[in-house]
Amino acid sequence: MKQNEKDILDSVNKEFNIELKWNDYEYNRFDAEDKNYIVEIKDRNKYYDNTMIEFDKYSFNIKYAELAKKKFIYVVRVDGNIYIFNLSKDDTTFGWEWKLIEATTNFKNRKKIKKLVGYIRLEDCTKKIDTH
Image 1 (cartoon, rainbow, N blue to C red):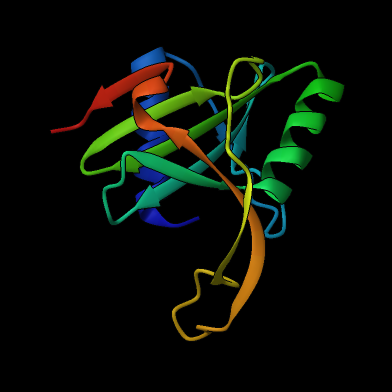
Image 2: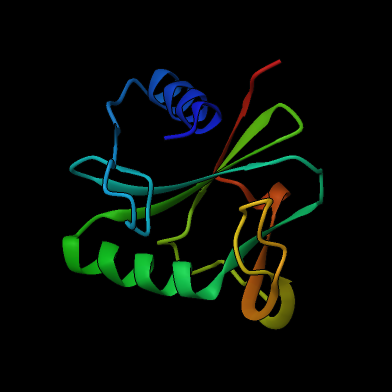
């Protein structure tokens, strides 16, 4: 677990008085969970009005959440604020498109590949936590 993601998870747990647990399995497709939620956490260095999500991650997690009778929550920290999205709701539109992006977030590997990605408007968040 990266410290910055742990800090985000701690803020979410504190804000909602819940106990999401970090998933230690290295290849899991989500970062944390409890009996009601599975959670993907991202920490973005640059501010954009829309945050990106990979279709592969979205499609797996939305189906897993449905089968496990949980909600899929997407948490993104941008510019000191934490934006929380309940992606299990049916009203999110993503504008899916193929985009040439880096294969991993590993800074040593800058190889680019095509990925299907979508965008979520920050203003459409379910909840915003100001961490300033």
